[in-house]
Image 1: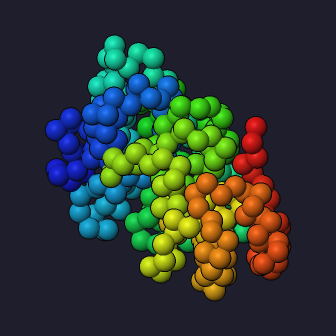
Image 2: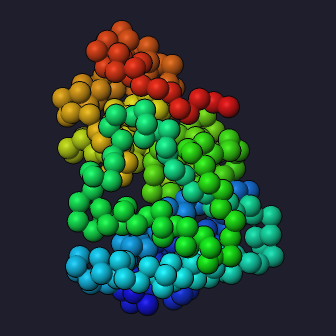
Length: 276
């Protein structure tokens, strides 16, 4: 195998996804959730994070051994599903999805393109489409290819490295993120952790809503706006006592009254994740 030996768990699955599986099983989450949405791009990216060797070695592996690597990842997925092939989980609906984010990339000016990634991350993104098509062909799964919209269903866990996927569910209180690598189950009150950091400031003052997301950014797809703008947002959040329960209507009203310049930025952004 091409990944580090310490990146394979006793379950025979790569650490990023064995961690979520262990959390799911040990907490009997099938009793609380009916659906589990898994971003297939996340599986590919995190498996690449586990490759052994320096940047030069990992790049050579990805360039020269794409087929073998795709089969390894497909086996990883199949092993994951095999463990869940148990009567306890027979009512669990597992959905793999492949988001292109084509529309968001078109309209969001601070969306990161492949040229924004350097080193091995650039190589990983360059081969992403080829690798994903190969992985899907080898794995025993059906994959829903989407632009960015996920079904608006309650009692759903989502496993993804793309925080903007969570914007699909901001109107539902009982959905949760099951985070790869850490295995942490993050409820809506914890989604602020997916924003890009603002120095050492406490980001829990920000509700996770689209109006703020395109400004604050994240670590993966959306570049944050300049620090000065984000600091003004932070000061407003403190002043107006925002919390994770603050709704988008109040956010927009506070911005319009106290930060009209930022309000204009927010209003200019195309709205993607309208309640459906």
